[in-house]
Every structure is written in C-alpha cells, then in structure tokens.
Length: 347
Image 1: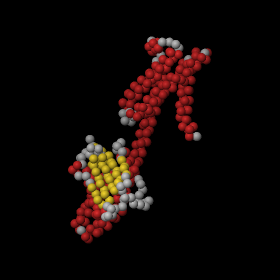
Image 2: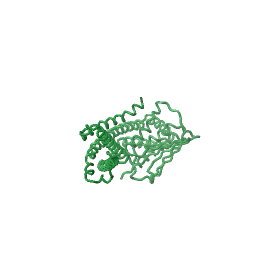
Image 3: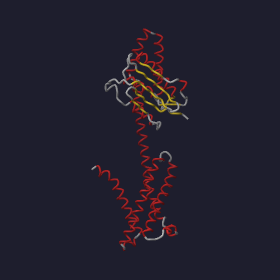
Image 4: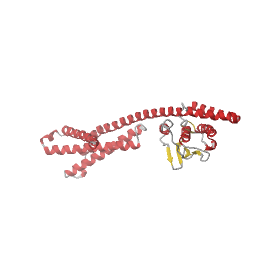
C-alpha cells in the first residue's frame, strides 16, 4: 500500500499530461486522423512538448522556491518567474524541434528560417498556460504556508508568554523568597531591606515586560542580576554566579523578555546544589557573534511530573522563531549544559 500511495501523485500527473497531449493532438492535426502514422508522430511530438514544458516549468518552480520565495520578494519573484519560464521553455522547444528536424533528415539550419521561427508561437502559448498553472499553484501554496506558519507562530507565542508568566509568578518562588526574608529580618535587617528591594524589582520587571515582544538586553541582564541575588540568599555558598560587565552590553541589543529567567530557573530546578558541590551559573555575552549564553554545571536531580512539564525551552525556541531565523542552540556534555540565545539588534 505505501508504494502505491507514493506513486499516486505521479500517476495523476501522468494522466493529466496524457489528456493534454491527446487533446492538443486532435486540435492541431485533424488531417492526421486519416493517417495513423502521422497521427502517432503528431501525438509523440505533442507528448514530448507537453512533458518537456511541464518538467521545465515544474523544476523552475522548485528551484526558484529555494532562493526567492513569493512572500519574501513578490516583485523579484515575478520577474524571475517570467525569465526562467520562457528561457527554459525555449530551450525545450528548440531541442524538440531539432530532434524532429533530424528525424526528418533535414539540416538544423532550417530551424532559423522564417516558417520554423513562426512555429515557436504555438508551443509558447502552451508554455504560457502550463507556466501560469504551475506558478499560480506555487504562489497559492506559498501563501497558504505563510498563513498557516503565522497562525502557528502566534499560537506558540501566546503559549510561550502564558508559560513564561506562569513560571515568573510561580507561588513556589514567592514562598521560598518569603522564607529567606523571614530569616534575614531577624538576623540581618539591612540585608533584608536590600532583599525586599530586589524582590520588588523582579516583580516590577515581570509585570512591565510580559506585554512586550522584546526588551533591551541591559534591562534583561539587570533583571537576571536581581533574580540571582535573591537565589544567592536562598542557596548561599551552594550557588556561584557570574554575569557580564554591564558596561560591555551594546545599547541597541534586545532579547525576548524573561528569557534569562526561564533558563536560570531551569538550571536551578533541574540540578542539585550543595556547599560541597556548588552549582555554577555563568551568563556570557559575545558581542561579535551576537549571542548570549547561559551555562551551568550539570548535576541532574529527579523531578516529579508536576515539577517539570518540559515545555519551557521549546516555548522559548518558538518565541525566537517568531523574531529571527537564528536558532536557539543547546549543547550538553557530561559536566555542563549550555543554551545559547541569539541577540537581536535594533537598527
């Protein structure tokens, strides 16, 4: 069954080409009906024309789709479509007529005489019809793909934003922060005041950034600094962090909001940390490559199904797909886990 199913498109195309060839033969060579030999010759020639022009235009569509798509440059694509279609069709027509002339035992020079030059008109009409069908089909498929892709990206973006918001306002985070604050108020009041300020900055940033598509990289790193300050209070010596120098962050760089929090939260959630074996978290910025990397030591711990849904990183990848063609890269070794995010630039 699968092989037959794979052959169905080819059988369908074959039947269409056969129907076109029979129709064109009957329309253009009624006098051939009295001569089976001439009828067969006319049918063969028409079939070669039809198949050759179909293939030339069909492959030109596939070739152009790889380099110039309708949704990206419709004007350029239209011009190239006309040039490639006519050029490829003329080559096919010339080769078919050359074969026919040689079959008749004539000199190839007759192809450049007036009667033969005028004979290009009818095949080019067939070409125009076939080309219009093939390229119209390509345009419609490209348009449908763009619509479906846009709807999918919008849905993934909405899911990513909802998941991101759910994680940022996770009650466990607030519960742990309040527990840490309770100890600080009794033992280190001044540090408790700073803790409260950093906590308020974290939640203010969450509320301000959640409706934005991108935020300045400097703001995202400042948020990460506040977030990690709170986590350092909670984990103590079990957590070691390293962030890039704020002065080295270009002013025109942006990233999706709360990207770093998701990666930092994942690192803290999925890895064990202790004073003897601290968890190292490192954020590095490469201005030349325009990438931002979050790297952590890999020491996996077992999570319950309610703790890890496994959709945070895919959602972040989907958010980036909505903004850029540059991929989110994930690298894992025996000792480290690294996620590298593209950094976007505002012109």
